[in-house]
Image (tube, rainbow, N blue to C red; front, side, top):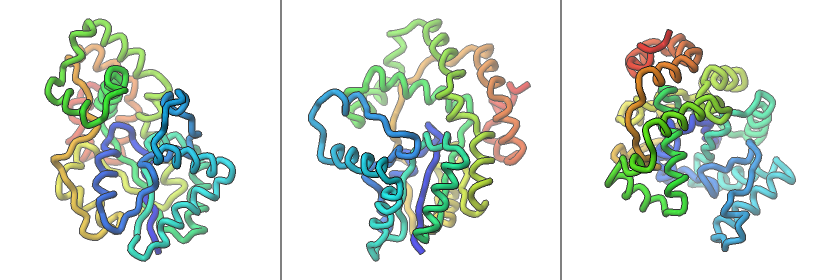
Length: 291
């Protein structure tokens, strides 16, 4: 049987890095993009709406999404065709916003993967909620200030001076922006693991779901764990590679840090209840603020 790797997040928890490791494998065939974004409702980006000339890849992506919208079965057939190649054992995509899919949507995916005889490999990576939120915020600031810059060029610029945006804002402005962000629906959708994980385990078998910690990804043990789960043989990972480098800001005062952490205290309690040893070790500092 062929394997379908479907990543559902979490956003800013290493999904881009993991996908770049997977796509180097000779037996993996990715879709036209890492994030197909089909099941969460595709919406055209500003670039697509602007009338600017699109690359052939972008044009093909738009064509495919329109095809999938007309008949969702085409999404699964698209990947089934990719898997027809004898050299291909794995296909798939990772779209972090899929963490917001409901039970019926997840069941629809499961049923259609079953119809095409795919082994299901469902991936959900988690990160300390507080640090995920800060990374999410920094990534939004990167997009705001470097959105028109080629990714690799932006990475170099930020690596050279990680705090280059600090001079554009006062501390109070940054604090206000983060406070307004962490309670938003967009942030809650991507941070409340206590909502996502039960849905995944209700729809898919436990052995079909891979859940791991961002903080414990970049080592040989993770490579071994993921390789065993995914059945990708001889998978090699580059732990020196970093993607989507985001600007840094001054540490938040403990008062605001505690406010954010305790807003998501149910998330901390939930993860601590199912992964006590790992969360106590990897999220120790944040857990010390949980009331």
